[in-house]
Image (cartoon, rainbow, N blue to C red; front, side):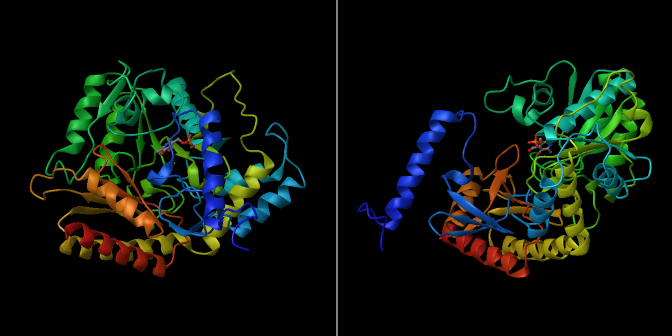
Length: 434
Ligand SMILES: Cc1ncc(COP(=O)(O)O)c(C=O)c1O
C-alpha cells in the first residue's frame, strides 16, 4: 500500500516522521549541537561504509572515521554482544580482557610506552594527558597548533584554537596557551616551520607539553613537513615539556603505512592519545605513556567508572582483530593512493582544486578561486559537498578557511566507492564551471 493508511504517501510519512524528530530535537537538544551535511539526514541503519536513510537513500560515508572498520561491523558487534552477556564491571577488578587489550595496544607502540589508561572519549583522554604532563614536569603552560581541536572540556576548549578563535569563542588564547603556526606548505610555502615553532616555544618559557596531532585535521588535513615532528619534540623537551601526540583522528592505521601517524617520523612521543576509531563507535579512548610518567600522580588515585570495562575491552580487541586479519592498513594505503591519483587528475582539469594532500585514507582537497592568490573557495567547497550529498556521497569541509574538503571514511571502503566518488566529483565540478 502507498502510505500508512492515514492518507499520506510513503514520502509523506517519511517527511512527517522527520518533522516530528526535528521538533523533538528542538525541544530536547541544545542549539549548540548542529546537524551534519547541511540538511537533516534521518539515518536508520549503518552497514560498513554505507548509511541508509529512512527515505531509502543509501549514502556512501566518506567522513566517519569513528566507524573505522565499518558501521555495525559484524565481528565487533558480536564481540560486544557476547561480552555484555557475560560480565561488565569496572577496572578495579581483575579480568583478562583489560590486560590483554592494553598489552595488544602497547605492542603496536614504541617499547617505552607500556602503560595505558582507558577512558571514554577523546576529550577525557586529552585532558588526562595534559594532567599527566603537568604532574610529571611541574610546569603548567602548554603549546598547541593553530586551528587545532582537542576536545570539548573547559581545559581543552582553551587548548583548541579552532574553538576559542571560532564562533562564540573568546578570540585569543589564555596566557598559559602558546599557539604555534600551522606548518602549511601550500598556503605558506618555503618557510622555516620548525624554526618559527621552536622560537615560539623558547619565548614561552617552561612548558608542560606540546599537544599536537600527528597529522593536522581541523587545521585543514595537513601532513607535517619532514623533520617538523622531531624538531618540535626537541624544542618542547628543551622547555622541560612532554610531547603529546593526539592520534584521535589519524590513528589505527588510517594513514596506510603505520598503525600510528607519528610513526612516519623517528620520534617517540612521551604520551599518545587514542580515540574515535578505537571502539568503532563504542565510546572509548586511551592514553599511553611510560611507567615513569604514568606514576606522576603520586598518591592521587586515577579511576574512570566506565573506562576499560570488559565490554569496551572486548570491542576494542575486535577492532584490532579486524584491522589485522583484513590487512586494513595496507588497504588504506592502496585506496588512498587510488583516491589521490584520481583527485590529482581532477585537479588538472578543474581550476577550483588548488591542492590535494594527505596520506592513506586521510585526505584533503583544498578549493581556491584563484591558484595564484589562493583566495579560498569556501562557498564552492560547501556547494560541492551539498551536491555530492544529493548524489549519495557524504563529505565535509574543514580548515581555518572552511575550504578544504576532507575525506576520512571507514577504511573498509572499496575500489568502486573510490571510482564512483571521483566520477561524481568530476560531474559536480564540471557543472559548477559551466
Ligand atoms: C583531534 C581530536 N582530538 C580530540 C577530540 C575529542 O574527542 P571526543 O569528541 O571523543 O571527546 C577530537 C574530536 O573531534 C579530535 O578531533
